[in-house]
Image (cartoon, protein in one colour):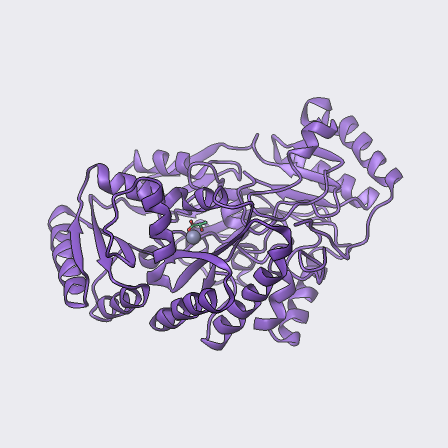
Length: 475
Ligand code: LAC
Ligand code: ZN
């Protein structure tokens, strides 16, 4: 999947001048122009392949960011910000080359304020490092995209990442109080606040979170923390079918039983787990991995109530795994699922659609029927408590691709029909841009493009994302 863009391409001489100016102003230690080095910045962890950038800047300070944006302005060469490059939709792929602004060198945790329950961090901090640091202080940063050992907070903020714990705790946006933001025009702003509440002016912070690197480049990120729960209980629930599992999730949530994670794995996913040596019952057509938390006594009660709720709702088996190998193995299998699936076929396109959770069973039916009718191989798993399903389409032969794309379009149409949305956590990026209009009417798209022009009139910041008409369909 080669990404492309209708954005204006800078000339070869502009690119060369940009690289030269960057080297002069930032020093060669922060600027790479070697094609082999640059090649590793052409893509993220999705199928979207950008163009090898002309220069990669490893920024170490806010001044480096300001200097890089100035070079972009002066030369007309675009900048693509990149945190850890683990994105799933091509957000960090430089679609017309230019400058990649990499944040691996800005990974400091500047402050953890225990009394205010706030952290201030740089964009390159790896999420698991942040988790460990705040948990050592008795605090908790809930968002936990499954790539947490490798993804970085800057990318999480850019994509408004979610993860299994979103069902109880919400997504990245719910924790970003304030942002230092570098605008491509040269201004440096702090939007948001360090207080728990605050409604002054428009919610610019909320707009920048999830803007996929297209509106501003982030500096320090101010995050809200919560107290760390003392105990966690895990339940593994087996169901005959994915539909039965999804209906049980709705029933249990309807009863007001709180879960902090509620992950569903469909039959094709269970087959893959069995093939990888995980002990999954042969009559299981779906599995739920559920977590509850609280202080010890509360957690015990929640395990009992939630377990009982699922039992009543038709689970074939309810296993409680407070600790131990099976729990850890299943969670690590779940967390590695996206990468493991990638190795199962030559090609993979992974979606992260969301529907109201009461109709998740309808969506699962669609996925199963579509597979039967059209023979396109897919595996579905995801955050059932949020109605957020990862449908992974797999294929080997290149000529199968049109059939996969047709299946994706049918999926998106069904999702929209069910009152859902195309992306719950991975963003639109390059890969979903051609489908934006299936969900959003023209005036809304135009309004967003107007906002983009206000922030970035020359289209220098991460061009080719969200709104582009050209993408994997065209190439
Ligand atoms: C997951 C990521 C890919 O849930 O969103 O596995
Ligand atoms: Zn996910």
